Image 1 (cartoon, rainbow, N blue to C red):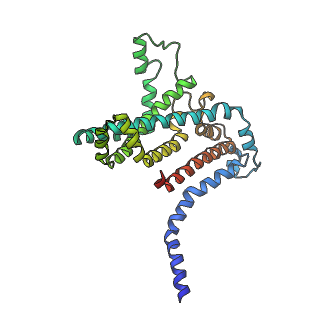
Image 2 (cartoon, rainbow, N blue to C red; image 1 turned 90 degrees about the vertical axis):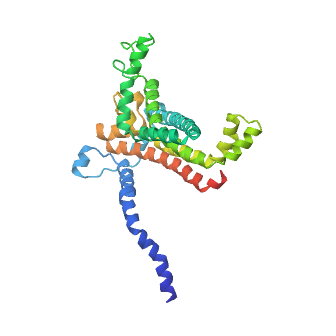
Length: 302
């Protein structure tokens, strides 16, 4: 009788979790397993039609890791772009949060709503807006700089140069991502006791000292979470790169891991090689996720 009750207590939670686990397995784990399988094959369009497998071991990974395009172009583009976007997103979001925290209730509500509206704009729409702004012939920025004599649209195209291409993409990603950081940090700022700032002011601390000595230590867990989440999102940016002129594969110098995987799989029909690139990107993201989970578990120590 005792064993039956113990068995019931042990199995009942798993039975309740079973539907969710089945759904998670079907939606998350199986696609990942299938991508790993494809990465070990020379899987092309003919294999897709016939349904036949063609395992070649780790040849796709060997070819990928020995490619100069990966080390000189794709990986630097992915890593440097993500770092710039994370620093820009967290810095701008924190600045906006500090500004919102000093506003009165009415203006705080109005400005917070405007920030949330900017966050609600789809990445596709935002990308087309930024492409229009920097269009060499008809863009607003081009017209302004041309009127000031600082830009010649007949000789300059920002979308063909690697640095200017990613500078525009970074502005797009930062604009799309800073509202999340602003609202999250603002929620943390509300919890900081105002007595701490009043005491610091009495001691003569200026705004910069109050920020670094009070705000940052108290909100360190919040900054850790938004930084790691931004890192994960910015590593796998696809839409903002793919929709920009030349970003869909027309210019190899602006490829990142996400677009390169898509280009190999769906433009060139090399699904095995494209899957190997996707696995490499997934490994990078899993490493970042591991850091994120470790940070959450050690939140009390931050």
